[in-house]
Amino acid sequence: MFTNSKRQEERTGKYGTPRLQYLQELVTQFQSSTSEESKEKIVANLANFAYDPYNYTFLRQLNVLELFLDCITEPNEKLVEFGIGGICNSCVDPENGAIISQCGGIPLIIQCLSSPVRNTVNYALGALYYLCNESNKEEILGPEVVDVIKRYAAAGAVSVSFCNLAQAFLDKHFC
Image 1 (cartoon, rainbow, N blue to C red):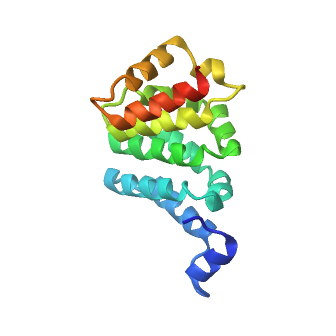
Image 2: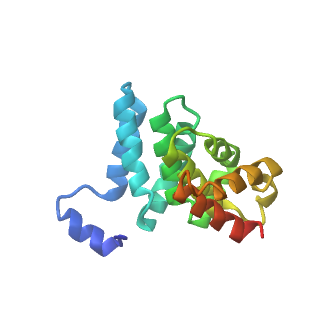
């Protein structure tokens, strides 16, 4: 369920931690953690917060979008999965999408299309679906990317979700 200020106040109560402070604590924990497992859990948690438009301003303020992009450059497949999940969840917002694009996120997202992790590929397809617009269409709709997406669209027997997401992408941006 999406949140608003009134609902957030009701949920946290008089002595609860304000959302911005809570998200800041998560970012700080991520930055200071040396445990890969802890980092995975924190990024997964942040990715869940990226789903709610109420949090978008906080995520931008705390540079969480950049943190997600950093995660998808890591060798740890869980960090990649949760990082691209956070990008996918937040990029429906045009302001977030612009930041992701300006920070060099599109090539990183495109790389996720070749991941062995199904969720990573699904999130990458979803992110590209939302990010593709007039300002970056040429970067996203390169022949190699379109070819990969067409192969996913034809892979219904392998993965219905790949097929459906890829076909939706093609229907919206290529046809």
